[in-house]
Image (cartoon, rainbow, N blue to C red):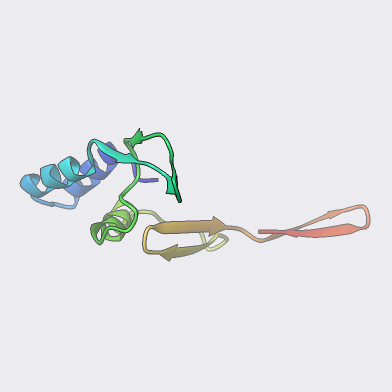
Length: 102
């Protein structure tokens, strides 16, 4: 999940101009979401973390957010748009059972 303050700091470290950082911060601020289905509409919720689902800019901001993340050779990862999946394979042997956990 993208933490907005951390994203702002990261953008500054990358040399992004301040007016653009402020524009992105304003774009991410005071956002709400609401679920609906058929004739039912849920409560409106606000959020202060994450990027906007379905936006064009969201995946780019997410990649910039993760730009300095390094991975060990023992960890595998899958990065697609604004999703990151981390995992590690290992085998545990207990009694007569062997299990593989991802």
